[in-house]
Image 1 (tube, one colour):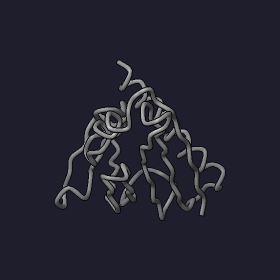
Image 2 (cartoon, rainbow, N blue to C red; image 1 turned 180 degrees about the horizontal axis):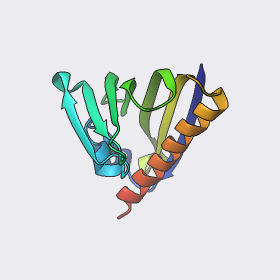
Image 3 (cartoon, rainbow, N blue to C red; image 1 turned 90 degrees about the horizontal axis):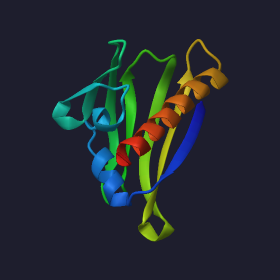
Length: 138
């Protein structure tokens, strides 16, 4: 099983960051390459669309409002991976005046090497966190 973790420090309080990303349906609010999201199954499954129109279906596995984190798995996606589990977490730094947002995941490659799938998801997480930072500094 492969894994990757990345983080970004943002000049916003943890509450400000969590307010933006805490909703399992909120990806289109801060992630430009996810233009649409629809919830089903009582809010525990999100149906995402990417710019190419490919479906990505993810399931909420764990939600911790007090700990400012959630974990999700992929049920369907155009990625060469299985057994995907990812966590998005917000922590306070610098006395709570700033935030560290960490995006991590583990997954098993299908038809590609561990290095290739790790690079793919690391790039998605890094680009996503940069977009989050940009949306908070507008």
